[in-house]
Amino acid sequence: MIGASGFGREVLDVVDALVAAGTRPGLRLVGVVDDAPSAENLARLARRGAAYLGTLEDWLGRDDGSAYVVGIGDPGVRGRVVTRCDEAGRPALTLVHPTATAGFGVRHGAGTVVCAGVQVSTEVVLGRHVHLNPNATVGHDSVLGDLVSVNPGAIVSGACVIGDGSLIGAGSVVLQQRRVGAGAVVGAAACVTRDVAPGATVRGVPAR
Ligand SMILES: CC(C)(COP(=O)(O)OP(=O)(O)OC[C@H]1O[C@@H](n2cnc3c(N)ncnc32)[C@H](O)[C@@H]1OP(=O)(O)O)[C@@H](O)C(=O)NCCC(=O)NCCS
Image 1 (tube, rainbow, N blue to C red):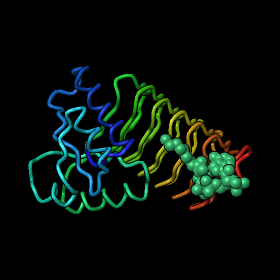
Image 2: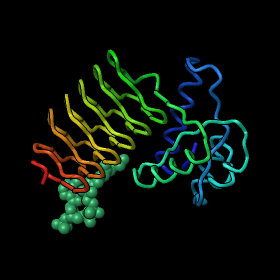
Image 3: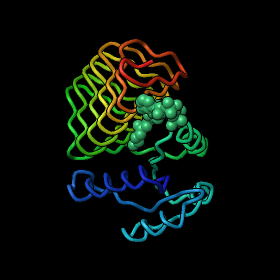
């Protein structure tokens, strides 16, 4: 697991829940990789018995046969780490918490993490390395690109298209059929009533 900060350790909770549920035979945490973990986060890892494995390059230099998942919330930083792991030929793991629900025909891209309480509706397509934070909802037929983050409690309504690397802030709502461009940021608690241009940051109700 790459990233010792907040979301990274939430990903460890997903791993723990899957191991406890026994639905992913062979799944085991080898340890946590981080280029610059704070002393506080190292103490938090130690408290839960998660080994710290050193920097990304340390881990890539040791071919221990393990697969990876990136627990870094920022889509841009996550993308850079994924590019490096791809170059090194490391396989990505997909993790879905046992309490998350998924409708018919949902597709999860490699490296995607789905946290506790998430509801993914029917025929949703999730790209690679998407993060769905606790209690997020994704409506029917929506398509989320690679490296999208949907923060806690956000609602992406039906038939939306969410571009690569965009961040949907906590508690926000994207109305049905809206398109959020690549690299855009939707502020916490915003309501997206119109399409959002690539790279734009919008906030408020209605979001501007
Ligand atoms: C919208 C957002 C991207 C703006 O970030 P920023 O550019 O760093 O904004 P700042 O904190 O400098 O605030 C700039 C102004 O926007 C306002 N603002 C910040 N976030 C806002 C939001 N979500 N809704 C409405 N106004 C917001 C601030 O009050 C401030 O207003 P002021 O200039 O009148 O004082 C960010 O605040 C946000 O909401 N990100 C999503 C965070 C999230 O989902 N967190 C959960 C993590 S699990």
